[in-house]
Amino acid sequence: MRTTRATRLVPLWDRNDEWRRRLEMVAAARDFLYASTYYLEYDRYGIEFLDALDEACRRGVAVHLLLDGFGQTLGGVLMADEAKRALSSRLDTLRQAGATVTVYRPRFPIQRRLGGGQHVKIQVSEAGEAIFGSSNLTASSFEHWHEFSVALRGPVVPVLLESYCDLGGAVDDNHVAYLRTTVSPDPGLDLDYWFCNPNLAQGRLGPLGWRGPNEVTDRMVALINGARTSVQLTAFYFKPIPSLLTAVEAAARRGVRVEVYHSHRDALDATDLAWIAAAASYDRLLDAGIQIWEHRGGEHSKIVLVDNERVSFGSYNFEDAAHDRLAEAMLETTDGAMVEEAREIFQRLAADPAQVRVTPRFRTSLPAVLRLRLSVMRHFKRWM
Image (cartoon, rainbow, N blue to C red; front, side, top):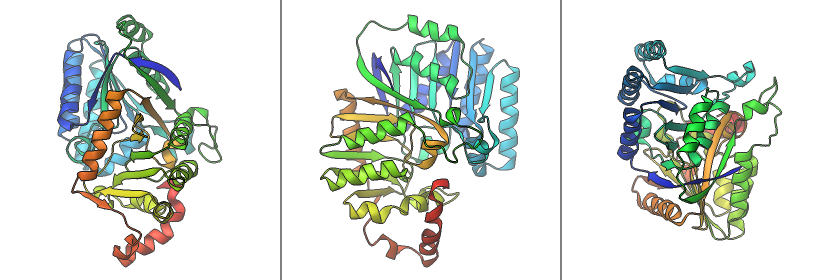
């Protein structure tokens, strides 16, 4: 954990606001621009972002783009072969224009085969602003799913850029030093930055047999263990590792109101395996008194609000991969304005007609084939 500050924090729940802010940062860049993502799709958003990066290169901007190798492969099932070839060509053209385009792949073969990579989304320019959150560069993130990011200024910005190296990217030390010189003396608000790339701590067996520690997971467990009255959280699919599952269950059993908002099984067209991995724990969670809501459109934000006093947000999904295969990062704060923003988001989620409440009788509404798959596939939750 690293304690830092932000002199300004702007919540970006609205999809149009975030997309506009991302493009404006690229358009305004004159010296350097860094962007990391798990997956860039060759749709109208990916193309528009690549167009903006091309233009930045023509202005002489030092452009750095970091993609994840496994994320691109996984997301590639959504793209036609023609689109994948076009994306590869565009990335080559960007490199030829002088940009540094990196596709992160962990060191050991077994890490790559089992889905090791980086899942952190950071965008930074010399203007001294960073965008940090859950969004990938895809239409899914900006037209379909809920996402949450923030625009930040202050000492936190060079901290975020420094971690770009641990995601597999290359950072010019002069760029970090410059950002430090632009920090405002305004005291701003306090933040804790949690970051871990488990691939850097593993040996030749990768996640097999690896027990951590993972700072992000450990901080998340501590946050939930400290809850007194309420825990509200969002995730893509809520399928946490045992220590986190135990923490939320224990919180509910000691009287804490626990609400989980994640995606409906229909939200991901390519497969329902992620939902099956989440549903494997439904009986246990419901028995503890935890409220579970599934959003038909897709929930991809990562927000944890505890006791209406403390909030964390970033890239960390409640899943095994976030613990032992993917680099993840979260910011935490007790800032009143940010806590209020999170509280209002959860109020909107609770009132959203696209939410489906999971009940103890959820199995009876499932087709027989899906019930059978749930019974069989739940044993492989770690890898789904």
